[in-house]
Amino acid sequence: MNSEQPDGPGRDRPETRDAAEEPEARGTPVGRRVLLGTLGLGALGVVAAPTLQRGLEAFLGSAADKDPTGLTGLLPNGGGFRYYSVASSVPRKNADTYQLTVDGLVDTPRTYSLADLRALPQTRMVKDVQCVTGWRVPGTPFEGVRLSRLLDAAGVRPTAGAVRFTCFDGTYTESLTLEQARRADVLVALRMQDKNLSHSHGGPVRLYVAPMYFYKSAKWLSGITLTEDVRPGYWEKRGYDIDAWVGRSNGRDDEPTS
Amino acid sequence: MSLRADTPAPTRIRRFGRAERWVHRTTAFLMGVCVVTAACLYVPQFAELVGRRELVVRIHEWAGLALPVPVLAGLASRAFRADVRFLNRFGPHDRVWLRAALRRDRRPEARPAGKFNAGQKVYAAWIAGATLVMLGTGLIMWFTHLTPLMWRTSATFVHDWLALTIGIVLAGHIGMALGDPEARRGMRTGSVSREWAEREHPLWRP
Image (tube, rainbow over all chains, first blue to last red; front, side):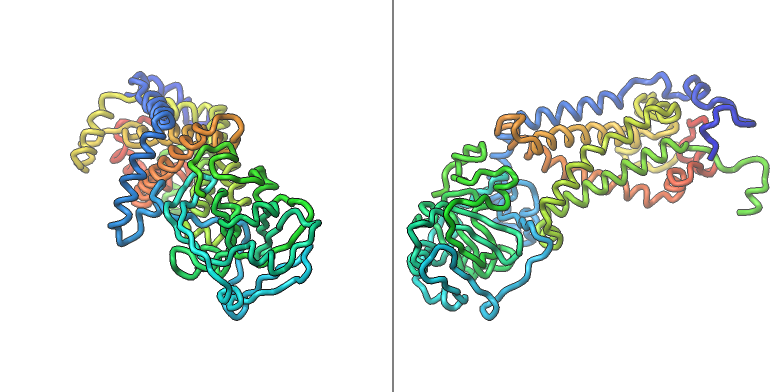
């Protein structure tokens, strides 16, 4: 291990000798060119990205339709949903264990079971889903109870100005102004892509805020609380916009979804 | 082994000093952290398993930022600088090696190499450049207020596709190391057998 000793017994200075005798000592600096070439290609990639991305999305989108393995979904721009969770693990809830509470500044706090929610009139809408990180899934059907219906049933007090959402992952929170929450395109969703909401998509019940970036559509919804003012949600405390209109927030210019 | 240790004429040849081995070790570790955290952010099944997105993102960012540090620190070592020079310079024999590789000619006499063969040289230069591109695009994604939105989307595009490419190339690098125990021993202990050196790196003058 004393190799760093330049003048060890029986050894001459390897570097000085190598530099003179090794065949590559005076060769062409191809390594440097490859490195700079890679950097140049990277920069070119950034410049050409919008064009390349459009082409790839079109190509991979059509390839994904014919791909039985689903591997195209793992490629960048392969289309489809990405799974994001901020909690370490998320408990599973089913029709027996799931509960949704509506409380806070309301006249009659209520708790709904999954069956209760299913018994209410359902609204279905088909719109694009836009994530703030860039991916977009076109024409995705969501179905559930209008949030405004649950708010009316609870009787919102005049002092309430905002709605806070909590989730049974124990960590995630979201919020809307009362005006936003009363929009017709905001659902307490029970179904997505015409199937019951799976666990990984936030099932059995998630929020669906059609006109906003998808982080507003909190997964694993378990609580709706009426508050005086808007309280920033999980990602909003980490720099994302609270009023997250698609195309008009977070410094993005995506086409509006609703 | 005890017999060999007593023999005065060494059959082991010194290939890497402490500096080179530690640069390789720490770079490999940081690259491993980047790859594992990237998988946990990107592959839905792993993301579902791990969750904790905020924490995983932080680890990924800091490991990525630290990735060039071992090489930069290694430049303080004369032996490491000599290796970087060997990796950079290509002689006529490297062209012969690359041509043989393209023809899948595996005969040792068709693959002349100095301390590093042409494949190792191309790999080293490419992965260094790719790491810097990942660092640049990663910083654009990290500090979103520094650049306009268009740049961020484009940087994400390059970061995603290059990550996939690096993953494949890295798997090749590891695969080749797995297939050559003596090369691995050289990186682990610092020395290699004389027969291996003469077969794999005939032009190397240690």
